[in-house]
Length: 279
Image 1 (cartoon, rainbow, N blue to C red):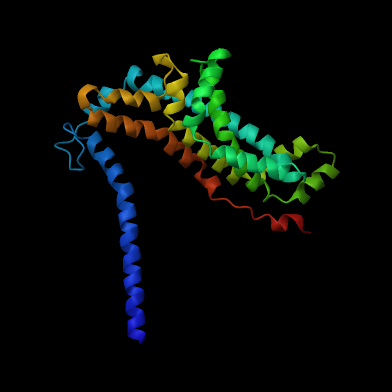
Image 2: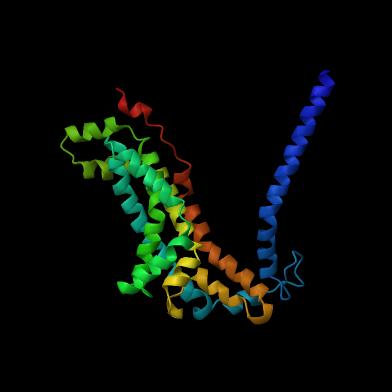
């Protein structure tokens, strides 16, 4: 009986390991293709060892027209929109977290509903509105829409993280004469650094990989971000420069990876604040 139970556990463990390996392969194979194809002078859709190592694919894309200008546009769009999103989400989440009201729950449910709206369903009225208010083909108009599209989920995340900061710390600051804004900036935000980091990374990554919004709202080629210019590697009649596409994908992914590395230490932080309100 014990042997049968042990064999069942072993079978289940092996099945779970096999399932995890399949999932891991689904993530590893595309990454392997990108890395190998970027160094392959005759890259195609197959995952294979390169037919000789070369950096010609990187030399071909590292030009202002192909890479540097689109990346700079992406940094301006996504960086500015992320900053605007984090600031607005913080100011909106603070009263939701600190003050009780009968409107809090309906407001949060409305925010939750807004996160489920597909972007394609609202782009037609947004495009018409942008034409009317003369924001079409403008960088600041695209920044505003990027921030507005990410704001609902950012508020929801920020509010949950802010709930983890004890209110007693703010009450002590209020006793010393601090205002609500001062306590938010000097007390709450430093203690919820991991939460701010999560919202920042999430917002930036979602904007960085967004193709549809800038493709619809921007018309001038010189203003296009890298998420749109990557489409230029797909030529007519199914011809694709796979090697250059893979090399561009690596360069395009670098800012997101660097952002995560820079704030990874804050992501590992916690809210061990229970002892801060004692003594």
